[in-house]
Image 1: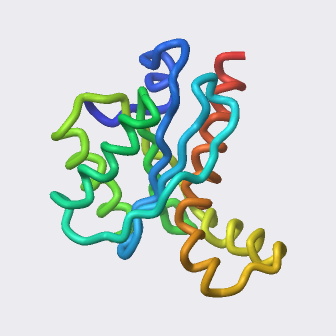
Image 2 (image 1 turned 180 degrees about the horizontal axis):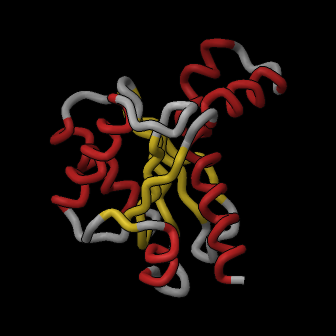
Length: 156
């Protein structure tokens, strides 16, 4: 399967089934999952990055445990919408995952998700140490929720 745009992603997905949101950072991979009806995204886990061949089975384990039917991977574009090294790394990460399994995959613009989530966690008076441990999975949930909301709008 190739990386799809939102309309193609919406069409290819089965009527029900969870989606796995992935925020691939350089140090950690944040994971979130939706409910099977695709209404709500929830933070699930953080994988501390090592090597892809060690990280991928952990990610696919969460995918299988949650019975996910598609992937939503954060695409960290620059503020001017250009693709820098982080966006290229996210695309390579997506291609590497798709080389292992044939699942629908969407890259989703994640500009400012980490900043928004960090502000939220600060507002909850969460300590810096706790924020550092949780921000990636909450960012994954934030970007996944954006996709879920857009899918609801598209599918009406």
